[in-house]
Length: 108
Image 1 (cartoon, rainbow, N blue to C red):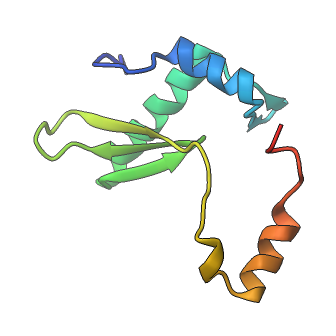
Image 2 (image 1 turned 90 degrees about the vertical axis):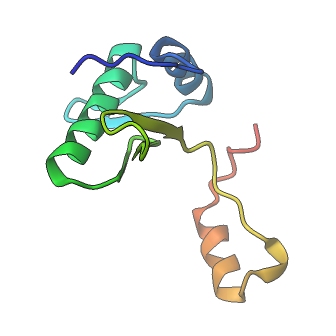
């Protein structure tokens, strides 16, 4: 699949962001920092999955592809940059889960 379009951040820039943040992919060879080629392959795979399953939204590798309703052969690409919550509305159980998941190195 040949990806082209209006990139706000192209795969090389996205790869640089992944490297700067230390966002790794799990592969058969272990953890890797994705290259531009790897990111482009991930996006192609997600779009291929959307096409083969007929789903409008597919997620993976910090990305989500969302079928554009106005252009049938195009997709919006979204990057997950974090996870936030309303601290005042968390239950004690939710606070405990967040404390267990917090490894302490996200604030560097």
